[in-house]
Length: 403
Image 1 (cartoon, helix red, strand yellow):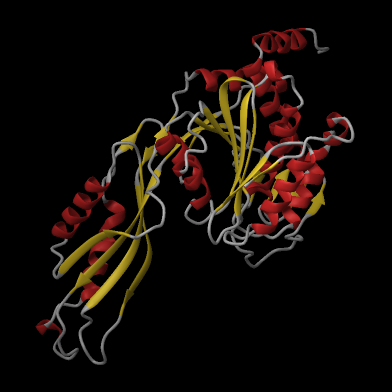
Image 2 (cartoon, one colour):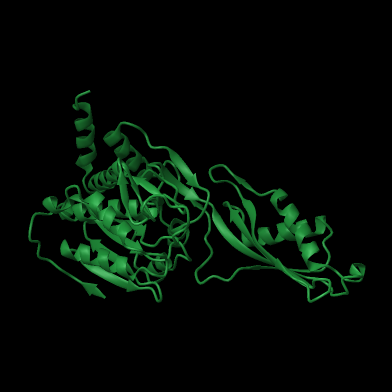
């Protein structure tokens, strides 16, 4: 569904001046646990329409709608991406989880992950829409659902070809203003052991599935995983274990859920071999089944962007010219929607977002000044992509700025 509003009542620069903070407050005030994103997606869509921007509401069944808005420019197509959903509200909050400003810190559920970055993207996109078409790239703004769940929103964008012309994806997840150029991938593994039932008073007559599975789980952290020069090493972590006896009997079945973060060069076949070899090493008895935990979207695979990629170099240059320092290059330890963009969409995907802390926990916060810097960095980067002269202008402004 596409709705368009073209009339602007007042100049755009008046409307958006200092808008980041007020927009952040509004976004955080709207509860948007994954699976409950209708209200926030409607708010963002309506906001963009008020600024005369075309909006497509892409329904993701059971999760509300993705918001897609496109402004045409020069031949490069840049995707701005942020997710609207949050995790649930946990215990231990001393600040107002629906928004509290204290100095430069704005507290609230989802403030850092990632409504601060989302606010920066929205304002940068609105301001970019006011640039002459010949002085900007084509920009596609996307606000998606279910990042904290199974990335149904982002997968829907890719699956339906909404981003098929993309040359670059920029994701505003919190990175403390570093440039994140890749991330590990992830498999969620289900291990099931079938032993042999016997009377618990004669355990030697049976095979205790709980004990046998425990022997395997105990050695898993010591499995040697592959090391990557940028992404580090893969890792295992047991998330869940269950097994029980049928009365006074040797437990016949036990199962576990295990997280396996992987780096480039580690695929599913390698993971299965590692686990089978580990089971042999501890002489585990019983029948072992190894499978991937079912999920509604594809596996999240690892990716990297080369540090000498032209978009990386240009974004780093813009940031350093604006703020007088070179942004740090980092790589993600865990997964997110960026994994889908970097692998299945197959275009350079850079994650760059504001300073913040305590995401997924009590008293989550984001820096207001950082949100503004992130917005300004994205906007200047889009200007530079749209006009070859803009970078020279930034250099000149820096050279003549008072010390």
